[in-house]
Image (tube, rainbow, N blue to C red; front, side, top):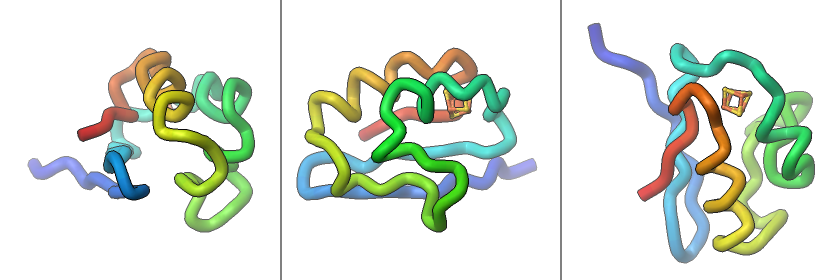
Length: 69
Ligand code: SF4
C-alpha cells in the first residue's frame, strides 16, 4: 500500500512528512513551534526558520515521519 507523503520546500531542501508514521509525540512542534504548528494549514512553514535549524529538528523525529532531501 503506498504511503502518503507531504512535501514542504524552501530554497535549499524539501521536508517530507508521512502522516501514517507520525506518532504525534510533539517533539517537532515543541522544539520548533514557528515551523511546526499543528493548528495551521499547512502545518509546516519552511519560511519560519533557517535550513540548518529545520534539519536539526527533523532529525529528532522519533518515528521517521519527518525526513528531508
Ligand atoms: S516529531 Fe515526528 S512523530 Fe513527533 S509529532 Fe512531529 S512528525 Fe510526528
